[in-house]
Amino acid sequence: MTTRPAEQETFAGMPTPLYSGSPSRLMAWLDCPRRYRMQYLDRPKPAARAQRAHTSVGIATHNVLRDFWDLPPEQRTPAGVAELVRTSWIDVGFRDPEQSAVWRMRVREVVTDYLRTSDRERQPVGIERSVSLKTDEVAITGRIDRLDDRDGELVVVDYKTGRQVPTDDDARTSLPLALYAVACARMFRRPCHRVELHHVPTGTVAAHEHTDESLGRKVTEAESIASDLRRADADYAEVGVESTRFAPRPSALCSWCDFRAHCPEGQAQGPEKSDWAGLEPYASTDRRDT
Image (cartoon, rainbow, N blue to C red):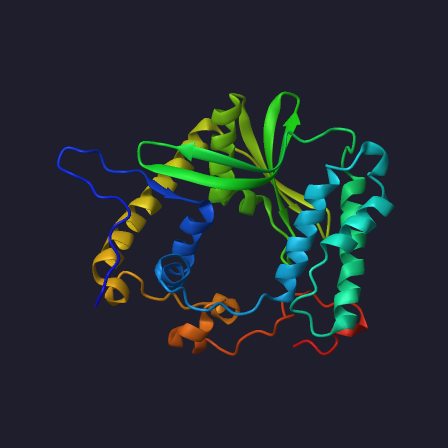
C-alpha cells in the first residue's frame, strides 16, 4: 500500500519538531482515536454526515454574538440582535420549516436576554480572537469566543449553546480554556487566570480561577497528549489504516458521531440520532422528537 510521508523529516542531531495542533485536535484523540484518525489523518477523508440542527443553532448563535460587538453602541438593541439573527440564520438539519422558524425566534430571545446582562458599552479585548501557545514540545493554536478585560486582568469566555448546562467543575477541568488562558497571558503580557463558560440559553456562568500552578499542569497535560499523538501520527505515516493505535472508543457519543457510518463498533452502540435530536424540547413543534 502507499503511505504518506511524515510531515517533517529529521536528521541526527536535530531537535524534535514541535507537535502542532489545536485544542480540538487534542480533545478528539481523547474522545476516540478512530474518529481522530478519520477526521485528521485519513485521505481521502471519509464523508461526514450532514450538519445537525443543533450545530446550525450553535453556529448562528456564535455568529450573532460575534457580530453584535461590531455594531455601533446605539444599534446594540433588541432590534439590532433580531436583524443579526435574521442574517446569520442557518436553515440546515431541522425537521421542517416550522421547527426552524421556532428555533430562530428562540435564538433571538435567548441572545437578547443574555446580552441584557452584559455591559454593552465595554468593548471586549477580543472576539473570536486567534491565539497561540508554544512550549518546548507543542505549538497550540486556537480561537477564543471572547476575551474580556476585568480590572486589568484578562478573562477567557467560551459560549455554550447546548442542552447541558456547564458547571464550575467543567470550567475547572477544561483543557482548551486553560491553554487559552496561558496563551493570552503570554501574548498580551497581562495576568489571565479566570476562565468562564457562558450558557447562552439560560444565562448561567460557570467559572474557575486558575493558579499559575494549575495552568502549568494543564500545559503538561497537553504536552503528554501531544506526545501520544506524535507517535500515533508517525505510525499512521508508516502503515496507514493498518495501524493499531486508532482503536475505537465506543460510548454514548457514537450515536452523534459524524463518522458513525464508517465505524461498525460505533453503529453497534445504538441507533443514530435524528438531525434535530440535539434540540431541547421546545413548544408543541417538538412533541414528535424521541
